[in-house]
Length: 257
Length: 292
Image (tube, rainbow over all chains, first blue to last red; front, side, top):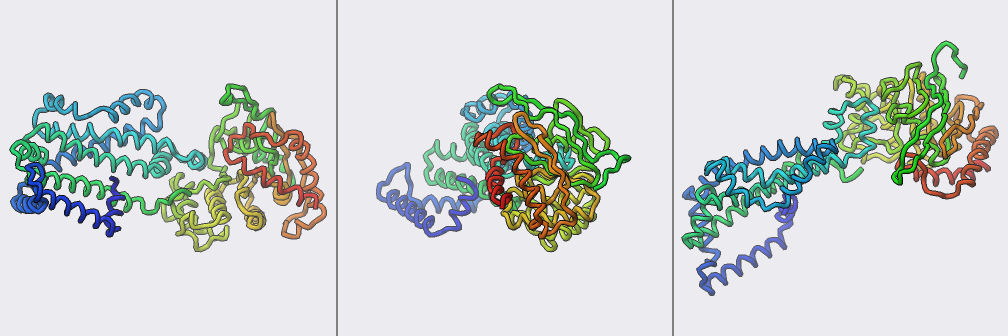
């Protein structure tokens, strides 16, 4: 789900609220009547959620996780944009790197986490590497696509008026590519969150993913659901935030010419 | 216009040719042996059917497209690329949609390192000159096509060029607005010492504006004939009723008709311009006016 659609969903409340209430109702009723150990009633989960939030049990791992997420995303965005620009501008660079980017997009990155764990140990470096490995590919692909889609007529105009190659990049190509850059950012953040939690579950003792692992192993289902709920919220909020930032930055971008 | 023997020509094209290989790996001669001179202060139009290479030739004069044979000089200096003494008005306007009108007009000045305050002042002056006073803070999409091309003209004038190159600038604009733009263009040209090279599909436009009309023919693109337009200046709306205007437009049509009839409605030739397809419909609207 993209940031914009999250915002739109939340600001178009009636159908969204209806589906939310329905889901919550079904969960609560089934949880109470079926008495399954794997599905505690929603009210228990929410009570636990409140308690864990109040006790700091969620916040400390969150801060820990967010730090790795932030560093990893920053690396992905900077390196991914630079690589994407190079691939978009130069067919040679594109030919040299395209296969790796495609592989990175398609490969199950989760398989690399044990490797990262061996190389980097259980510190935050492994989690940062996981976030980068999950998120950098979409940033590269979107940047390269956006740069390649520059309108030749605008570039020709810029050249005619004496714009240098770097001015053409800064003033035409990157601005024109901004919707692509933003979409890459959105997808990158979503994948980064995914990668972070996946990595933490595998590493098993750190961050929010560590909590998932811990409560899952001991069948503390209400706490497990509370953590999962928290992670889903975190993902939605991060992606919505990117969408919001993007729309503030590119307010004036028209749809077409 | 009197010829100034001492000053070098504003534009001198000598024996220019260009060949390229198309998608089906055939060699296509886009231009062959093109000779063309624009004297200082002169207004010269190029007209010809699609595929005659007129837009390609204009872009060569600006230094945007390389050529294989011959030489092109602007004010006595060989063209190696775009230069500060030339500016182009583009068929598609080529305005940056994310910039305000005033920033669009200032684009060329910015590339030359002119400071923000000064280039904004110059840009606002030029907007007033092209009849867009008060529109500086609008965005291009808020303006009509005719107004957008006035912005394109102001952007070109802002760099104070001595040679103005116009690539079918009014072909995407409705007929009535186009007439107004033509008279405004002549008024502005009259106030400057600019030489203008103007590519068009419209015969009445070429005759109305120009000192000379260069008729090109396609396959390979080359100069077919140069017609002197001896209509008095300043030219006004009344010029369009002048029997001599009608006669000259008819003359241009005579030269073009043979090429178009012989050619039939085939797909476009080597003209690089993607929007060149928009032209023929404009040109086909002309014969009625020309023979009226």
